[in-house]
Image (tube, rainbow, N blue to C red; front, side):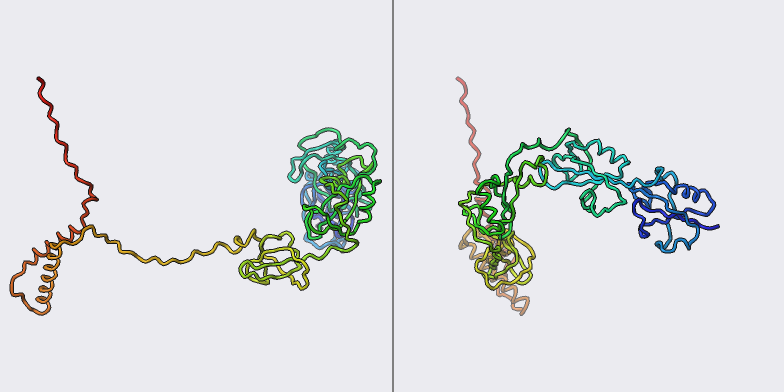
Length: 443
């Protein structure tokens, strides 16, 4: 008996490297006969090695290894069971659909992959075309307008799909609410184009969008002459130098502010042309920064872009310590530095100063509450003499001329020491008991 193999291709892509070779069992059995019956039809399946949403077709059945020459080498996977396939009669449809979602709060359109033209997912979204939708999928906020659904033929050139890069296609989100017919806004009445200019800070930061009115005004003509020039704005909130980057206009051809041109006017500011000084067609000056060591006040000039760290502190690989960043002027000799970490200020970078060591001299903790009396002095003297006489007797064998009552002297010594450590006020004053009042007998 000979093993047979089914050669399967994705619809619209019959290159050899994309071929899927399936082991369909021994020749003459029911399984090879079933797969042979699929020739001329197409199917979808979620079982490996197939991908759900992709259509496939059986190109041929091969029962000799020689006919697999030129195909990827085995081993080959076993074919899925017949109940794991959704077979559709006829050749591949080869039309895949893409939907365009336009965010109503401005921004870049989102292109969603809607599968094949005859699949349920495409039919579901086709009923939502032209609607305003809200999604529960993370990453989607606000309202979106499903402007159109485009289907293309996979047998054709798919370098772009409906003028969209295939790499930008994303899975469809989950619809949580349908707000009804779109578009996002009512069509604008025909008006003269309204324009704004975008200027870029030379020292980095966010662009500034300036409203310049209609394209028929002298201000518009002046700003056109400033394109690719550097300017200064004589207002305190716009320090430094700016590069005039571009001008965009919204006019009678724009019927939906959700389109890409609309964000031009969002958050624009009004600046009087009299406050603008044209510096000519010169590039932005190369910014430089002064690094000042927090401890030694040593300075370094660098042309590394540290705009986001101005007035803060950083550490760098080339030099130890903490360095405060400020904008430099007339930087002639600069060097590159490699950023390690940023800090709010020198204290955060250096850390708190270690506490200084203070030597503490121990003080005597014995408190005497009583000055020695002549009696105490006599007792201590007698104790010292008696102890010395006892010492001479024990060490040298010298006896005293008279007997000494050592026990009596030791008791007196202990009583004297006890009296010295006894502080009467600490025990509280002794209050005599009140004398009872004897009431006179009633007369």
